[in-house]
Image 1: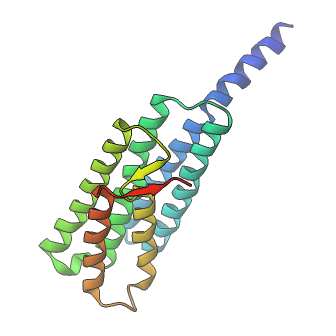
Image 2: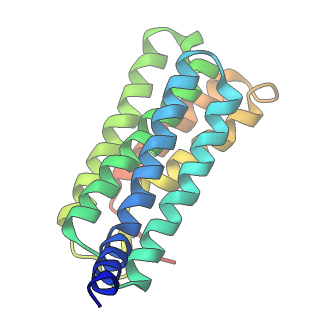
Image 3: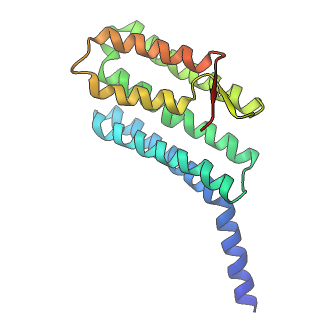
Length: 179
């Protein structure tokens, strides 16, 4: 009887942390994406950002399905998102093309990260009423990452303009219905 009680408690504890483990997988993949980007492995960085997006998608689903949503999980998710969909995509696009612009390229790379952090902070203190205010950082990060494929085909100024648009879209007041 004792062993089964211990096993039941262990399973409950693991189940309660499953969403956080997926969130930490998101953070880990984003962290590795940054490291690979810094070492000029941009294609691998791109792949890791998209894998982080999958982990991010499933952490929320698991938390809701298992009814284990917590304030800690919400904060951890935002901290992971700034790494995986703020810093990692910004660095990928900077390394891929924006570095050619010198100071403006660097400025708008950092501006994107700052807007993403602002967007996440605003999300964390707002009521979730079925809508997002501004473009979610996950969507902005995935769009920036996806644009990496177009670097050989589109003039470089497009990417500077795109980062500006994504930045302002994250902090804008427009509403998007959650899906």
